[in-house]
Length: 255
Figure 1 (cartoon, rainbow, N blue to C red):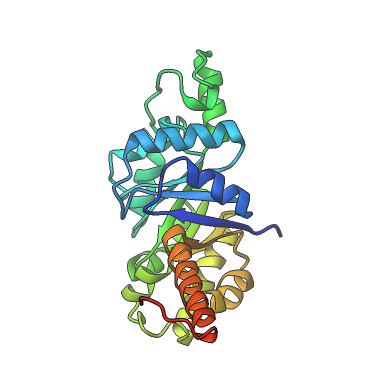
Figure 2: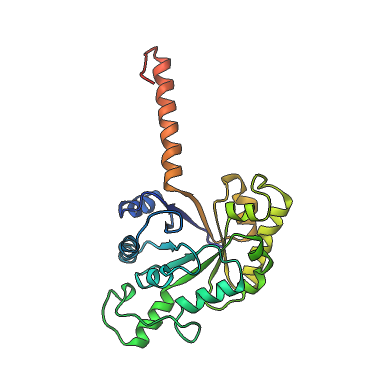
């Protein structure tokens, strides 16, 4: 099994972060609209840059009923991540909005990014768009867990992704991520995904739990961190190391 590693861009979402993610060895970049001020213009720019450079860009929209669903897809999102899909009705709504007939009822747009904006026959446009797009729904609640088999069975959905923090909060174990019920819940979601031919993915899983919660359950995609966490961790380490060197040299510093 090939496992792909992703970086989430939450605060720094100019085009440079794509280059940094790619050069660092990540396999894809998640641009987050749910918790940030990312605009559709930035979604379009990043998606087109990803298409032209061959580096996958995944777009997380604000919520299942967001107007950004179809617009992000039209802008060229290679993977659409939809948070808080809590029911089969939510999953059906998403598939209906972003998939062309016969699976859904997505409106047929004018030339789109996936064709290089070249006008093509409508049959080619829809076929290429469908082949290009993957749809990920996030499982983040006890309600979604209860309906997981039905959600996993929805046509037009490709991936089930657990968003760990909200998921733990909803099932009553926010401060106990190692609780046996959490391990069982992860396994249940993964089993439903595999049973229906879907990919299993995770985001927000601590490094020491990636093995038992992601890899042991056959996760094919792991969003391991975001750019601010990386920057902060590296900044603190750099400052502390440098202060240790200064102290060791017997030199005063301003901190």
